[in-house]
Image 1 (cartoon, rainbow, N blue to C red):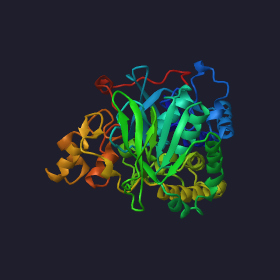
Image 2: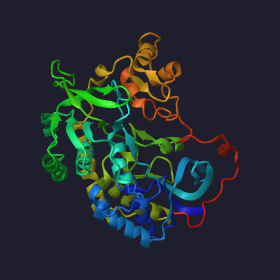
Image 3: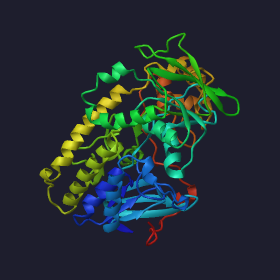
Image 4: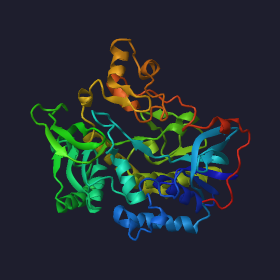
Length: 460
């Protein structure tokens, strides 16, 4: 099929961009891998579950209702259950390649004049002894179970790591009837307080979560970290310890917390696979954009976590600006920034807040000290921390790519998306730029087909 603008990602940024462009006469097609639009932030329970109050697990539900109503009233076409694996650039136009079907083996092609990347982010995962035990989940994965499946992972949970995501995960579990034994936050209150001015806008939301934690009698341990998860066939408890000012565990402060669930997270990383494949200029770990949310590749815009992790409100502002810019540029006119001035002010304020959050809730500086040599780092290829250290200290590897070649760390199904930051931390190297040609694994049979099918009419 052909469209003017292909938006990849149906989260806050993608939907805001699609609606802003559509209302200005642009034919928009949104492509997303989930069964329903909304992204991770507005993840919905399956319709078959018959949830009576899905809003109970969400923050900003009224905003979602407005987005959903706007989408229903618009001409935007939404293709759900379409996993985008590559965006092809050719002669000033683009072809979005996706897979659909239960086996993700049915190729689909969407031809577009412009592309907007709103591919969100993924969790920053750090290994520690015992982290591969059943019962240990990521914080975002735990929240996805609650929101999408209305399922709790266990009866007694510890929520640990660092960052603002831990708060809604802990309160969500407690509200669902799980006993939350502790919220273990590695950031110290004094360190967070140094960024209080930039985080002032987040205080009401944080205070609301804190009140709910008190109501459910959830113990909060700040300046602490998980050093080990215990169990044989599944998780039975965790050991936590206090951190000193330098981010090292303080001897003699260890304590054991019995639990059958550990929800652990250390923040988010931008999803840049498609942008990397298109050759978009990076800005550190994010995609570089200008004031219109344009990337360095003509015809490609980006918004949301792809350009820097900052939450749903920032994603909405960036998406709105991008959609208006696309609409003007496709019509051959220069956009008027005055038209999106309120969104631009919101964007600047929230970017400053996001930078402060990243500084206030950085992972402990010496987290690698707790990773024993027998700890599995790359789960796909079962590569241990000891093997990674040997590649550096014994075999002379000087970068992440060489470690990968020597150990196979990052050669598995996820292609280093999950273990890459941990391998980089253990080697003392910076994250290596992505060299993956495709954003996800693709069956060889799909690559052999010269003409992918167009999307089915009415598939949304």
